[in-house]
Amino acid sequence: MPVFIEQYVVVGDKKDTEMAAEFWRFGPKAWKPYFNVRDPKEIERRANAEVPLEKVYEDWAMGTDPEVHVKKLTELFQSGATGVHIHSGQPDQKRVIDFYGKEVLPRLRKLGKKA
Image (cartoon, rainbow, N blue to C red; front, top):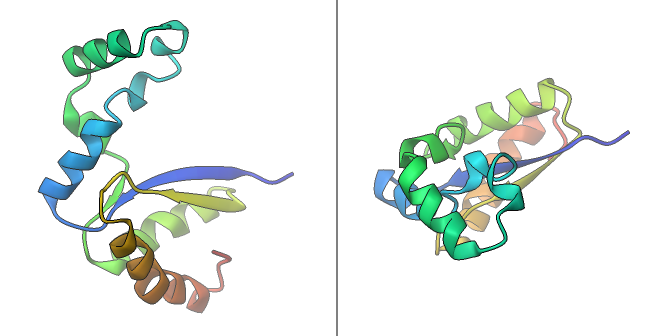
């Protein structure tokens, strides 16, 4: 049975990471306890009060070193994932696509991983 994982990434610096993380601040508590909260404004209010920004991006692949991203993806495949969906909340999506297409995916292929 396929095992798919969503991996958040940022291709950039800490400022880029923090900007992207602001959009996903609710993430660490999305299933518990925010899942049953019906009002998105209440989720946002609670997340801003309860979730430190560093907690949001602590497991993300971040930076412009392709090896950081390759290492994270390799770990996910070694843990049993059969597919990884890359998700980036940063505004410059083209930068992420180009970086993964030119720098990350070719390295993964060399390692014999499916990407």
